[in-house]
Length: 226
Image (cartoon, rainbow, N blue to C red; front, side, top):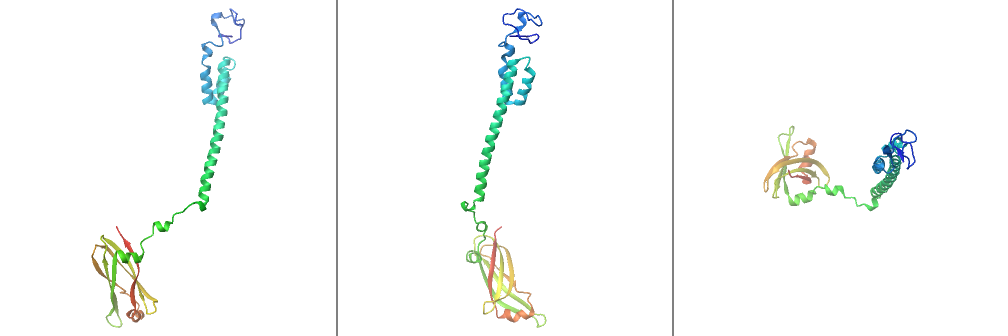
């Protein structure tokens, strides 16, 4: 056992401490309450190893059991934390590697066709389901020095909802060769409503004879629903 007063080790049968002379009533056995909290020192050392090591150094000469418990707890806690860190690192590397392989191995991935997701309806589909476009005659008025030209374009919304359209028109000769282009747009055309627009109002004078013999047709239609 140890002396409570000076901490010296004395014989269990001694009545007084041989070093400081303290009575037996002041002598504490190793298993007394002063050493009973050693398990908590071990727990504290396990969860906070640095604190456990500090307690070990502080109590090494005064409270051997507490010092030993704190030291063991700190050592076990430190080793456990290193082992857990290594295991987590290995698991992370395995997981990251599997994700990387999944991304890189494009042969095993079905990549969606982005263009198909955002693909607009074709001109043929719009002409079939939403709109009728017809052309009048290409007209030339005014004198030969300041000729004025025009082409009537009638647009009808044959769908059941209000739509806007952006229409590209081309003029082709007898061989099908394009000789001119123009664009018209109509906004907020109600279901069943039709409107007549004017195209080819400003053309070069030398193009007029070709346009008078040309055939006009829809090259492209864009539909807007908002």
